[in-house]
Amino acid sequence: MLRKIQIFTLFSVLSFLFLSCTDKQTKKEIENHKRAFEFHQYVVQIQKENDTKIQNYFEKLTLEQKISQIFIENLEGCTKFRSYETVGKMNGTKDDTPLIAGGYLFFSYNIAQTPEKQKEFAQSIQDYCDEYDLIYPFLCVDQEGGWVSRLKTLNDKLPSNKEVAESYSTEQAYQLYQKQAIQMKNLGFHMNLAPVMETETSDNCDFLDGRSYGDYQKVIDYGRACINAYQNNNISTVIKHFPGNTNTDPHSGLPEITLSKEDLEKSIMSFKNIIHYNPTAVLMSHARTLAIDKETPACLSRTWVTDILRNEFGFEGLIISDDILMAALAENGFPPQKAVIMAIEAGVDCIMISQKRFASSAKILYDKAQTDTKFLDLLQKASYRVIKYKFDNGLLKI
Image (cartoon, rainbow, N blue to C red; front, side):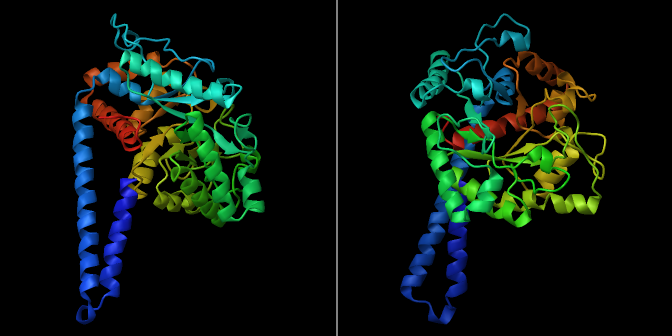
């Protein structure tokens, strides 16, 4: 939100400078210019103060707490939350402090039968964290629309992306997603793993199956409406799956994108351009690309995660791996114990793991950080981004 305010105020200042000729400036114009500049300076100062608060808070966290923030895991049931692991399972001690992840992903079986019961379940997570003085996790769900609608029994019907692009104007799409955001927020959610920002092609249409808005222009136009509608109503968005997919389902196989480098660069332009609208996060795909780092799935590739997405595209938000338990990784030489290390080395901030336990994976990171200072630094950077996200979105009071 602060970044949006800064952009707005800078735009205001530039507008005044451009539109006001020096020899014709009125006293009122000069005063407005001064106010805009002072407001911008105020916003910058507040951001600096918040950054200092976050840094001071972060430095006081234990390594175990920092590593916990990196994981997004599934959770048990749909009635009352509790942790099933302890910190001791991560660090090899007898520490019986409850271990909880930085975020939780809700599947259909985690959705209660009524909105009231769902809110109670979400509140039980807050209550549990308060009881044990734990960092509150963010709660996320796949509410894309169409056949990927985890909240279909609680929210209004949400058409697939393909249906939206065919039957709705962008203004109507905004209103559609705005209503979903309000309903999701009321249920206790903070993040939606949507929208899909892949353009539809003959190479991915079977797998996406209506989850794409269509061609490049439709993906940009409707993706922008979706991101703005959710985030203007306090639901974070996660664009996916970067840099793309094929018709091979990563749940059962490893997608191999065989496009030339030129065609591959064209295919990811929807991601590059939508980043300007500040989605909260980008979810990486498991696909390997023949033209770029052909040996490594994108979610484990430093070339794709850091060199391209972070540095070339300038993305500053969270970068999330897809589920590291999928067959695309686990059955193709990248089992979880290897994937967790590679994900952090690639520059991933959040590791998604669909099982209901993450201590064994966290222990792998914890043990490596004891002897590898470079790896520890990468862990720190990833965890800091999660903490900053929580503070900026009101999930963490410092």
